[in-house]
Image (cartoon, rainbow, N blue to C red; front, side, top):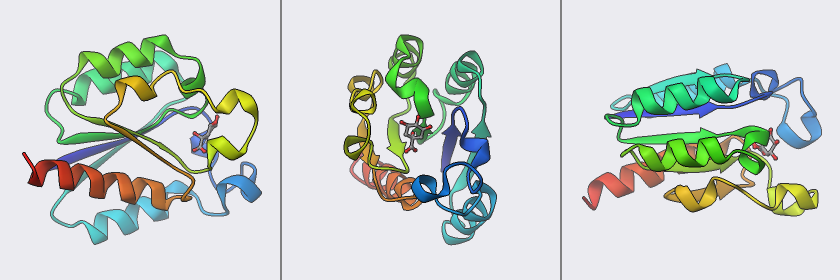
Length: 143
Ligand code: DQA
């Protein structure tokens, strides 16, 4: 089973960026721990700060992956193009956020991509990604 994690803008700065909100850990050690925990799943990883590159990656993996775990960062709140890309592919996409976006500024409460996603997980720190993997596994079992 292949699950792809896709991180959007500024998520390359995890551990450095606003640690009070996003934590002190960079993504790479967390990714290694996920790969160890889910040894039977091929967990791909892609990060870009560019909207078009994120769309390209969704198109590349979105017809074969069991699921995509997508943290679109700030593009969550703005991108019709990401919404369309998610709708265009066949793999289920789970929207994730590290922070609870509903506890924060008003502009973070609206997601352009939620209506196109299979589900949304937010507010559990990096564990949001693991919960999304569990959700994709559950969807496979019920297929
Ligand atoms: C985020 C929340 C977004 O509002 C923000 O722009 C991010 C990170 C999160 O993971 O909590 O870049 O997606």
